[in-house]
Length: 197
Image 1 (tube, one colour):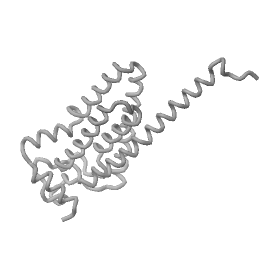
Image 2: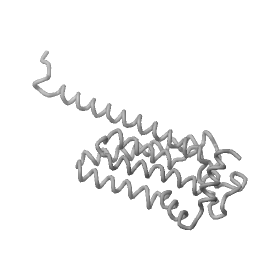
Image 3: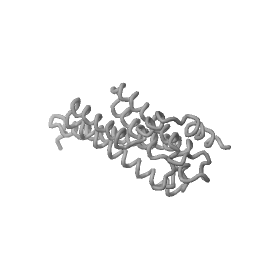
Image 4: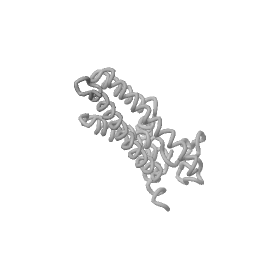
């Protein structure tokens, strides 16, 4: 048995319980877990930083969307099946966790999206230490939920985590570059600093 199947069996079969099912389905839900986090973040940043914070939040949404689209393209490229597609893909699959909406699972978009958002927040709002810890914990729990529910093999979640970290870092650097470029342009246009011909 491969390491992927060993870890998946431990999470999906050995850890299985009614409480774990409820908990990990919540961690995996866009509507009851991911979206409320984003809405809370919007309210927080709007209260703290006004329209500047709202603009930053929309930048975060665009970054997450970029990561999500990249994940979809990579799924088509790799065409690696999800463990929940059939008992041939994963022999320990529980009957109520069979999925038929998407058979391709490399990489995990949940992992990409959460780690993209987390790294973007960490690098663009370095003073928000509580949010950093909270989002990192949420990212790990969301990734583990995909394994527990057999929506992804562990390797697919790990790949998504690395890709999300990479995207979050690159987009944060681009965000800072644009911010500093705008600041420098504004400084150059101050009349007292403008060079006369």
